[in-house]
Length: 216
Image (tube, rainbow, N blue to C red; front, side, top):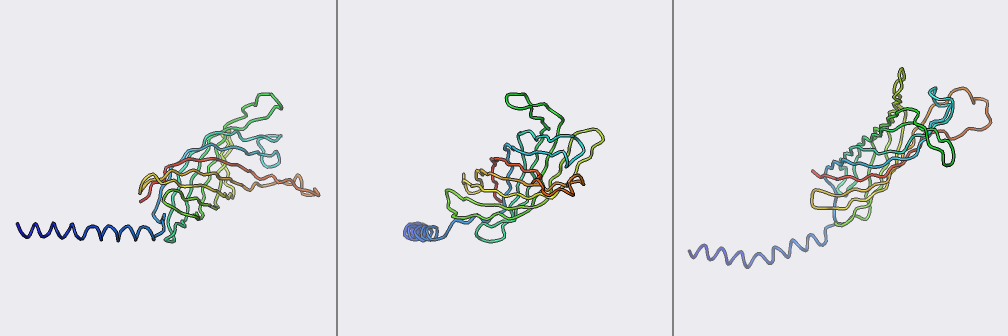
């Protein structure tokens, strides 16, 4: 009985100093997002035009209709301070449209899938326990898949840049909000080899994403 009472008294005396030491360590140790994370996300992708001299599908320029997108992002830490290798898959099911002009309805010219497969680096800045802003730069391919009979999908080099923020919910979960832009290089045929000018006819798209960042 005396031994148990002595142990309790010892814990009562030691606990305040241990808690104070832990508080001091947490106070002076910066927040670090240095865990493996997996982020499923949904968003809305907008923009994009396919020019007549880039493909044989249409004899005129057509737009890529804005629509929802979804994907998965894997972050692999490479420094103790939150810099990560980023692996990204990002898919959109949409369709080609023909803008008929002001107040004219857009015609659906056929379905079109765009999927980005990317790898790059994410760099955070001004990390805190309440907010972690970051930038991301990636490169890889875009799989362009028109849903037309007799037409096969095509892969093109693509790159992206993003700015976003992570808002921690608890130790292993954060809300992630991001704005990302893509550029996909497109082939050009021989129709304008002798032109004295060239249009910038790459495929440009942007998107706004919201996801849940799970840390492991």
